[in-house]
Image 1 (tube, rainbow, N blue to C red):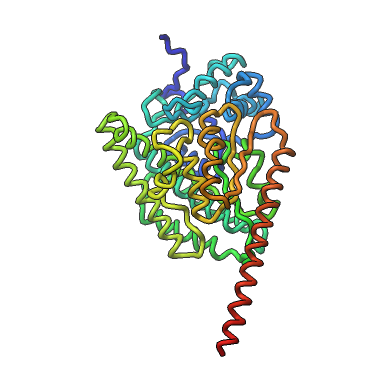
Image 2 (image 1 turned 135 degrees about the horizontal axis):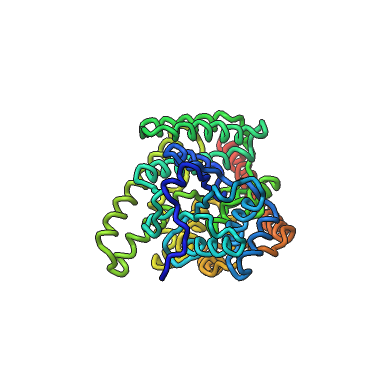
Length: 435
């Protein structure tokens, strides 16, 4: 088979700008600065709106999953905007190596570029499976090592921000800290030397900064967000789901990006245990898994030591949370992780959950929507809704479903508060009688 892809050469590295689609702005801003430190010209795309969907549907079959339509649509919308010299850009996209759309985006994107008359634009794969090589684009172990800390920093700030924004007395204080620390960390990532001692000092400083934000002590409804990775995190993909929930007075709780990375690593270990596949690969990935979970533990310990914030759940506990519901062999898409994350949220006391389901993502409909009944049977307190996202989805209908879920959640919270008040009154009466 002839390789028709356009290679990205060493000569191109000097002049070409790499365009990266958005998903997690804080995480990705730090990551692109790592690439800049290694000599790449990189830009994180900021374009949004219905025109992305239109561009995606124009060049991608409408049966393709919604995240693919949006990511490819964002690229094509940017290329057609006139902002870039289309003869001096390359597109960067991730490729996981599994059987899901995350591996096939790259081929759909190249096909869409040809249809749009832009087939000469190089498309670069970011992957850990050595699937595609380009002489002008090489992600070395030091680069991946620094990207790990970008993910950790991003997860830390996302976790702290979500616990501050609904309660902050000075509106915008949390976002200001995000901007401040993103700039600081992005600048640090430009330097070749990375000290883990400095990383941990940064963790503590970030936690203390967020902890110093004046906050109200009121209790609010907590809503967890799980689902397919793109629509779970991307405001473009989920119609600004977080923003809407905040406007309705809720606190959002979202498992971090590191969990998905650990899930991918852990699956390589599980493959050997289940199928006897590639013992050496399993051994290597087991070492990586232990390394990553130690880094996560350090961050959790720093949060606990320096604040009253609820830290992220250690991933070491997550695989066990799916027991009784789904097998570890179910690993297409978000696989068993999606079910485990719903159980993780319930375990944390977050019983209100939105499961984001994109059109065309059959695996996540099975491990997400398909697992809701058994989870509700085991946990009657669970208030879970599946929210479908596609090119024709009505935002109003989505918001109405969310409002109904929040209404039920508020009613439950009000009953809980009333029960606590009655219990407190009875205790006081009993104490008086003893006196």
